[in-house]
Image 1: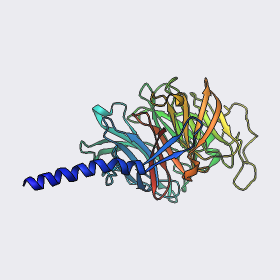
Image 2 (image 1 turned 120 degrees about the horizontal axis):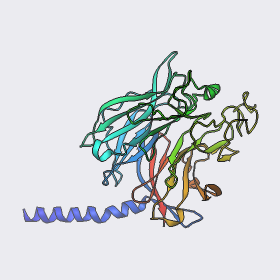
Image 3 (image 1 turned 180 degrees about the vertical axis):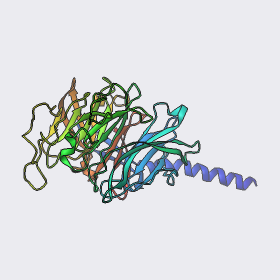
Image 4 (image 1 turned 60 degrees about the vertical axis):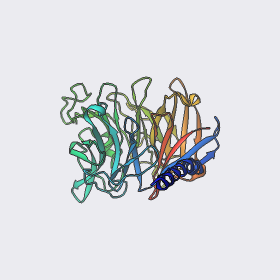
Length: 383
């Protein structure tokens, strides 16, 4: 028995001492203007991951996979089996299981919010839906899942669902919604295409939304004239929602979202059709009564998830914004003077990965997801 005990102790010691070497081998050092960028492969084998959310108390991260799975990734990179209780999703084209956020009171209510493509429209068309359920104590089941919001009408054949979920400081839930590649609907206030909506956590509409009480107008609408907003985050210094959206061929945008404003699509755009022809409805780069982009990319990087950096770990990153880029396959860092973009850096291009989401972790590192059939979760920091 003593020999077995000593052997077990020895084996455990070997496993412990060799583990750091295995982790170190997965670290890549890449170029950065502000020092060497360290990129650690935390886990891989994810199927088109779309978003992640951090559980409290170092319990790990919830990660969505577009085909319809919600998984747990532990802090040391172990990947769980799919969590049960997730709704069926319409996994076609750009559709599927999309964003995930925790309730602001998660420690008390254990509520998880999901956005996803939901079928059921005429001619097998789909729209964005949002629902919520409670994560079981063993982290294996999403219980009592209930839909709290549906994009209406359902018009997508597989394109432009949005959709990001953001809670503001007052507990309201913002949802970004694509125009389903049906351009004129972004200007139609009786439809929920091409909009940012604002609701209570249970789906009710706040009385102070800008269009409440107007005939023929959806009361959920907070802003309109959006194309395909696949990134959104709350500015931690101002409490205002910022959003990124795909332009067509050119004209990706960073927008500061204001109550009741029209952001122009498709009347105003810096892009053209994929065919090379102008957007038929566009009057130019500007249009009367619309808000121009806060910052615009004439050549589309394919903007995706975004994160403001306000941690103390890497002070040179403070007050910067990081955004994923699907087309240019990079992580974009924006530097500001006040709210004005004064500098841009492109990172991680050497990896040739479509970056779908970026979030600031509770440890001050960035966590980055790649959109691939063998998707990767990276932990990113400065050496």
